[in-house]
Length: 166
Length: 385
Image 1 (tube, chains in turn yellow, green):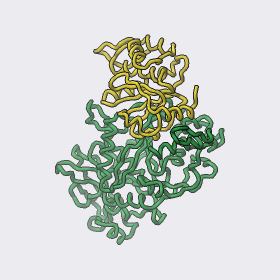
Image 2 (cartoon, one colour):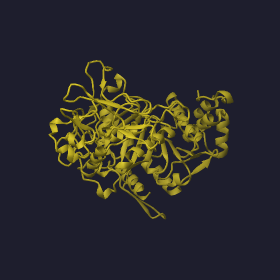
Image 3 (cartoon, chains in turn red, purple):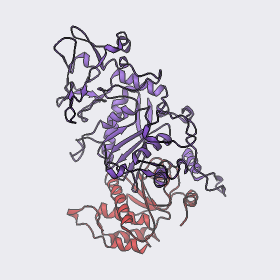
Image 4 (cartoon, one colour):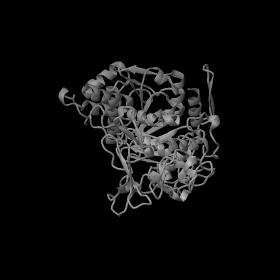
């Protein structure tokens, strides 16, 4: 797994990589420092890679959610942390913010959180969220244990939307 | 107008909502407008994996080693040196956060820690440090969109007042940064009175108050605990009615006390007529209903100006223990708030960067050099932005 310095350099060279998943939610790799995230119209940046947690000052103009998780087999700790970040991001989306969820390469950890955000905002099932993300972000969600956990999340009936449960 | 950046660090990504935060920030900006101060949120970040979400439990008062707490501290303050303390140095979470915030917060900003629980607001005076702590329910109004707000609309302004040196209306303390001597009561000329044989004397300027012996001055607001039980509090100016109208009962030299109410010029520092004519604003540094409008008195604006103009030395707190090697004199750094770097006062070598991890890498074609440590790269990136 590349370290922070390598991710910083890659982000600097590649610039901002973000694939729109929904109108208000995008998924991408480690973002470059500076105003690129804010200038792209995002209000909230989620940093999901445990190895890439720069201070929020380096991303002026956006609110930063530090949700450091590892691309590892699913655990209660990973699930709880991702769910909490997703709930916060969902609240941001519901008040009109645009959210960018990132990890090292924009595949698994950002995908996990993105799927949970969609479940929170739209009530769709985890399986539907996985399908959507894979369609919009090729190569995403290859962590089998993440996908297994997400697929166990049922859709929320329209009348009784509440928090995600595993 | 001096614009002071705020850095919100939320320990746990819950609350306050954007609406609650905006309401409290707007309220604070209204309160501090007469002082020529505006606050803006420059940085807003939350940490899902924070050990500082709360420390109200007994377990959270346990002492934790630097080796254990260091990663969490360095996420907030990337320049915190690995060897700031020996690995086995222990302090409580509150002390670690208070101390490191004082040491490493950029001088031009106020760092506001927001926890899930704990006291709704607690703040360092300029001579005590640079930290502000809030619980997530310490923001917002009762009249939020859901009608179930926290009723803490002006708490943020109240705590910012403490950060800028103000004491409660019913308490006195601190030192005048210009003289280093304890503030005289005369500096709070619109919050004090002098009992006289016939009634009481009030003041319209600091010069007027200085003309009488300091020992004869009393704070108008007396909120004391005559008994030992917490609820047994005597407040000579409270409670206010629903419109903020208050009556203060003052001890005088004659046998019967003097009662003065909102609208009386003698209470000009405690109760303020609002533009709608039917409600009264309370002093921002009083307790009581935080939903009611709040104002600063003229003497409080003068005191804030002193703290913004003249630097205050920090008195290290007893529970801080040893400071990192090489720490110079600690300053409250209120003079640097909202100021460009060239106007920051020097306070000793406490901003040393962490050790470098990369040497010098040339990124071909882009013409940029990544040099020094990751921290230096981050700082340079920030400067470019």
